[in-house]
View (cartoon, rainbow, N blue to C red):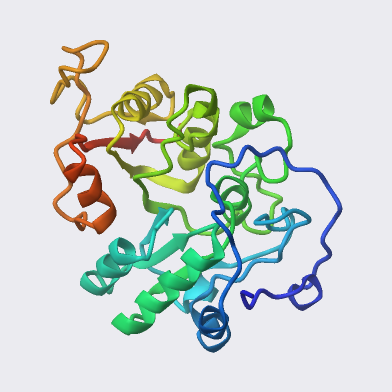
Length: 291
């Protein structure tokens, strides 16, 4: 199991409180084999340690976690949500040693694969947080949304920093990435998609002014949703508004899609989508300056 500290070790207590959450990920079986357990045990320095919460994959909404201390330095922060095996994030960290790279993965075997990739590449500027991003990131960045269990209330305050939260002083991220999140293909499951108005507010709270949220998907209707979320958000602008129209779009002349980001690694997952005949769309959102 992940080498996660207890509440006592972190100086706090886990309160038995409820959390609003719709899982945007599927666990696909979370039992760790002996080799993966060994990775967590022998390379715990690569874990971003947060106090576990009362529900699976959650963190304690009130416990402190200092990002700079856990990386051992202050540096521009990039956060990747759903990193797969870590090829993208770890590769970027290798090529950009000046950044702190945080990979957020709820699935323990997936987090173990990220650790293995980081160990193989011998990087020291990567940390892996094994938790549900939508619940844990508001806590890590000290947002008012931390611990709230009402989705409408989260939307109203998602971007706001809570000055009384112990993590309010953590640095904001330069970039947030959500590459190929679970598309939840069935219409009745679309509510589980991560890129939605609620998470747009959370991403806005995580990002520094003019910071960038990068997205990619190989599912057309999710790409249109991503574009709509960005352009309808009060927190973001779309620097590619009107560009690269998609003839399959219900609004075929609207556009709003970015060119493929040349720093994004072509992973096996993306290649499978291309081989299946699906079109990959990139969407970019830039954080508006705070008033």
